[in-house]
Length: 259
Ligand SMILES: C[S@@+](CC[C@H](N)C(=O)[O-])C[C@H]1O[C@@H](n2cnc3c(N)ncnc32)[C@H](O)[C@@H]1O
Image (cartoon, rainbow, N blue to C red):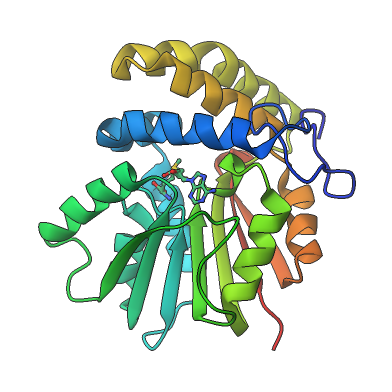
């Protein structure tokens, strides 16, 4: 837990997502909009690098854990270029998916994938939505998914409360995020890799070193598995559990809004 600048009890209402320290929300929101609007077209390559090539494996794990039924209305938060949305469509075939993101340039890539057949015959709508202020009514969705989203949000507790609000009682929450390896040796190696190699390697391949520097910092500043679970409970979620992937480099948290 040594890297986590934020704990749910003493977390300020808004933070700098690169450091975990108190800061105006605009600082992180403007940075994140700039980063994702700039890299939207090369995001999928960026994702492959930033997840160390493991994102397919982790996404498959997320799909196995997600409790989504064919009759469900699903919301994908921070859906980006649609990876999770289209995986949910393939794996679960729900009644409808609302794919949302803060950055329209990311959704444009998702819309382009959709036009070439991604998501099959599952009805999917795309909309720009800030997860910290969701423009949908209470209890609108049966299931919520989010991958690599919450780490980029400066008002995290507010965002989790919003997600809780739009879920129906009994609704499922599934979140994939970078996390903290519990084994100190593995954690040390991983943090060395994050700090020194990822910005260099990622920058070389995509030409966007700043995005990778931000990525490394935001991962180090993000709460570990247990702290994030407590944040979910603080927002009202029950049955909070997590499963680690690649020794805790990533984790999938699942939870439920009580009936
Ligand atoms: C690393 S990408 C993940 C995209 C996608 N979920 C995936 O798995 O590939 C993070 C996404 O979070 C979005 N995002 C950041 N802050 C957000 C917010 N406050 N509300 C909604 N989306 C946000 C970004 O625009 C970006 O598309």
